[in-house]
Amino acid sequence: MSNLFDLTGKVAVAVGGNSVLGSSIAKGLAEHGAKLAIVGRNLEKAEAVTKEIIENGGEAKSFYGDVSSLESIESLAKEIEAWSGGWDILLNAPGKNSTTPFFELEMEEWEDIMDVNLKGLVFTTQIFAKRMVEQNRKGSIINISSVSSTTPLSKVFTYSASKAGVNSVTQFLAREFAPYGIRVNAIIPGFFPAEQNRKILSEERIASIMNHTPMNRFGVPEELQGAAIYLASDKASGFVTGTFIRVDGGFGSMTI
Image 1 (spheres, rainbow, N blue to C red):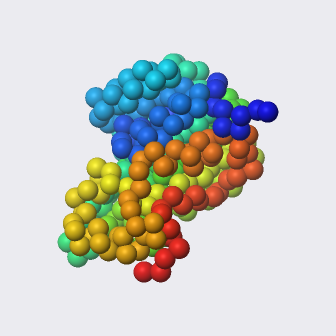
Image 2: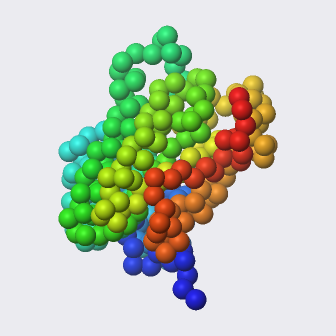
Image 3: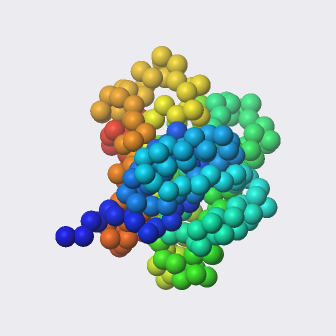
């Protein structure tokens, strides 16, 4: 019997693969046979992820990429193509957050978060998906959204708006790319204590989150791997596109 989740021979580009959640997903893809391009603005962190993958028997290389710069992403795509010949899987996992109250929000901060979380994702996908179409390379694009994209949460207004945009983009591009055999889906993580949200996790905030999380705990980054591996595999999810997979401990089933 063939392994539904075998990614051997596939090349995966993990944009934001140096982050807590992105790196965990990248490691999971590598463990199932994919060759990984680890992309991030912090090259030192990307190198650490790459080193761990290689030490575990996988194949990976680190690349610098700033999704807020079109020039940087164009250069990145050329570098990765020179290294691997192309790619089959694109993971969009960069993220930026802020706790600025709405009435104190300034345009510079709004644009900064949107540049990374939404605009950066759109133009990264445009560049990388175009190469996939040109090479007739069918595959999978996996976007990382958030529970705040469907249930607006206090303290993260701009982040929530950006992730709601990610959901819309995911479904639009699923329709747009379907004729080319490129599937576009998103994972909606619940509360994982990643770097970008630690600063808003006061005791009061944690208690509120737990009150709305039936499993009564935070997620562990490795718990995102299963959803990503499923979506990355043509064998396992070949007829799945425009879909959101929630990994949120039941948060999505609650009414706030």
